[in-house]
Image (cartoon, rainbow, N blue to C red; front, top):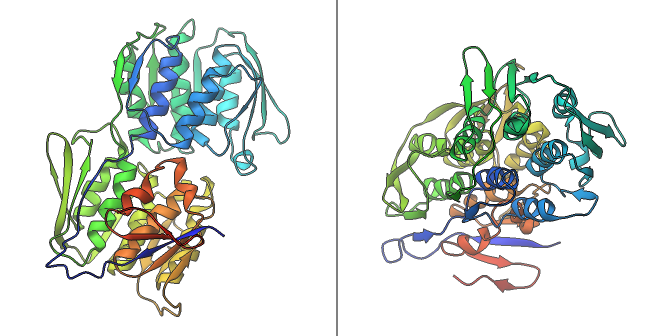
Length: 426
């Protein structure tokens, strides 16, 4: 089994402080939205700094492909965005993916697209891929209701195609609205490309006028989700002189995961923005922290692992959506955190979870972390190596969102491919 061993820094910190400049991967979330919007202009935009993540590269390939089968592999965003795009543009496509992808629900989006006029059939189980798309005949109804508490990607997928509908779209959101920053990211990118879109959060409606997109150049920001692992590295470093610079981040980002700067301030990381980056240094940490991850669920794993190692009493809410991601991330966290002497427990079944750090640790070093074919499990646990040697199984799962992750980690830690005896260059 392929794996990497990460070795804790052993050099005297006074002579070799932990310092690095990291050319972060660009935002997969921004890239994937920009690609759909570009496609809706007839591929006439100049998109700069597109993500090299596997999900984004899959999106690029499938948008240009004439193959009748669109295999998204394990890319949930790609599945949802392309289903809406292929539907509204009247293409005949079979949408499919990995076995796990075909276990992830899509019925809410399909129902909405059918209301608008899409001809979509389930090929196996109702509510799940694979799907057969057979064109689009507008029904004349531009009012759609959709739950806001399942996946913001359904909402974003519908919003992005809305300007192409003859009467635009009025989207009614029911229930709680989760991951709202991702919806707001979609809205701002749509506006940049010329859409007229009016959200009324109190009335729980989003109105989009029928209006063609305008082709324009667009620069993708670096990825705040990817930045979170470096925040954790700094938080867990024993070197008080640690300084890590993350290139390409903005203080007023469209990305919801920029919340990591506020979260990690309580965990001992100070952020200082420059004209090209954010510089991370050590600061005092609080003994406890409560955070609602409803609008930034992709940060939960990183923060949970960091709190467990630092001994911070962390209370997490808003993480129910993690159960239907690449894996059941709540269960995966519970299993792997026990290996590093901690527990993630649900409190009274009210959807609050707590990190209970420093239970009896019976595992020998280095601990071996299973990644469950989930890129964020691999990267969330990597910073543990700032405190102790650790082995991460199936390390190439990071290709989904941050292909250069291990090369970047090698700027701070020794990274060994233990099956091949190979080290990444520092």
